[in-house]
Length: 120
Image 1 (cartoon, rainbow, N blue to C red):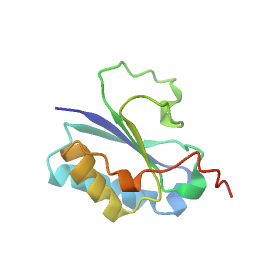
Image 2: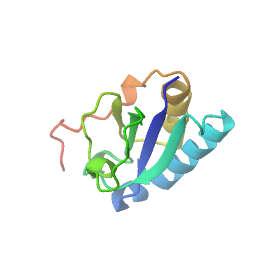
Image 3: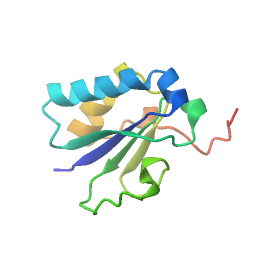
């Protein structure tokens, strides 16, 4: 069974866009489905895609020892099993928990495209 680490951005633009509600929805959905042991939920720093927020990053937990100085809390690492979701809402977050975390099926239509060049 896969395990995950899910980060909801706490940067000012994402918070203004509703990331606090996204985080609450994630916490509640994980609890409702009994998935807290499968998914560590935390608030990450700004990933730099503010115009695409609220942003969420889900990474498969491979057992790699966590380095507290790693940039993983504020940048995409390109690791296998890493998924970036953009323009998240509470409803979309509940879907990510149900499909990606519970069923191990990332929700492709919600993937963010950080290299889209739309950096207004």
